[in-house]
Length: 62
Image 1 (cartoon, one colour):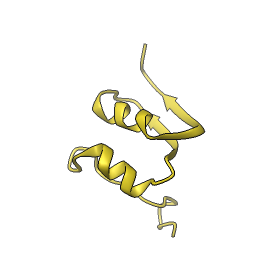
Image 2: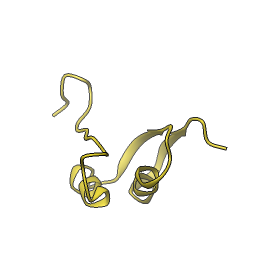
Image 3: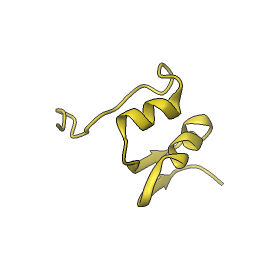
Image 4: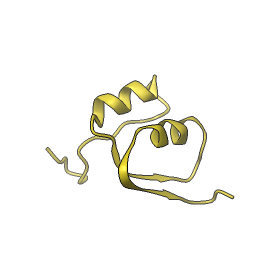
């Protein structure tokens, strides 16, 4: 069910560990859309769990 923010689920990556296990639990079919402006562990875990033919938006990376 979609919540009042228009998402199926969300979490605070700083408070949620291990990230990969949480992503698999919340997104069993993979991540559909991911926006990143930080990089690091969260980006690595998101890309590892991205669904096939889905979108990743990067901001501020070189």
